[in-house]
Length: 206
Image 1 (cartoon, one colour):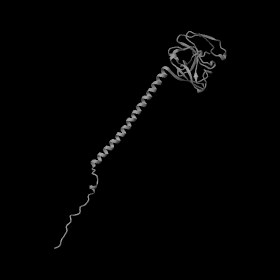
Image 2 (cartoon, rainbow, N blue to C red):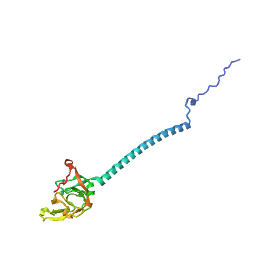
Image 3 (cartoon, rainbow, N blue to C red):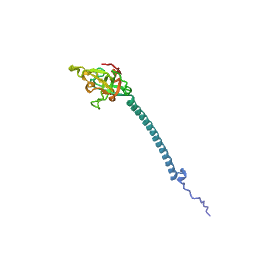
């Protein structure tokens, strides 16, 4: 009789047995976590950007409010151009700093340099010198080059008499009469530009 050795059928290796179990549900979970992290990072970025924008906006608002209050009630810069205030100011242009407190309280002095709104043209803001206050008797010559006769005027209440330092080339109270206080914008304190002439402008009578 023959002897036969019968072996069990050779088993096939399943490649899935060597892989980490990872189903579609696992993949969905991973994508969900990664997405949440990205969304969290994006949300954090926009939160920081929003806070920075709010801080910048608040800072700009504070600066604007400060400048508005300062220029409206305290002081403001003004530009002077032309020959009417030679030699105090250059005809080529000057930037001056003017304060509003003296004009609001009507505490001007003779010789003060002021910024005013022209009674002839509201769009013009010239700079002149106060020659006379209300109640003063002022003698003046309309056109010195023509040797006009001297005239006299009493400055009425609520007005001042203003003239340019260079009377030969200035439109001032000699032309348009006494200036109402309501048209005075400020009293000049400092010459800011040109820088080589930086300094105070004092009340010098001419």
